Image (cartoon, rainbow, N blue to C red; front, side):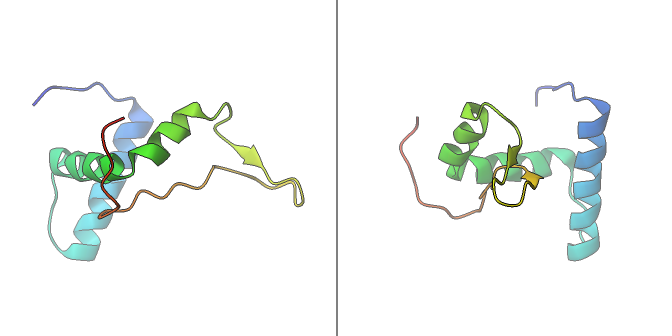
Length: 85
């Protein structure tokens, strides 16, 4: 497996996700297994993932309330199969 450099915040988040999986399932998960699952899920929803990078702003403001939030992401396993983009 190739080594991918991650910044400290990303490493902390990855470890927190691993801990959450371990707490909720009672089973440990390696970083590699977690990343593989996340990539598999994102691949099934690759249109939404691509759209995240197309957006000019990482955050959007709701015009009515003024609330600032991230665009909704729907990365779910078992999504419809799509041809490679």
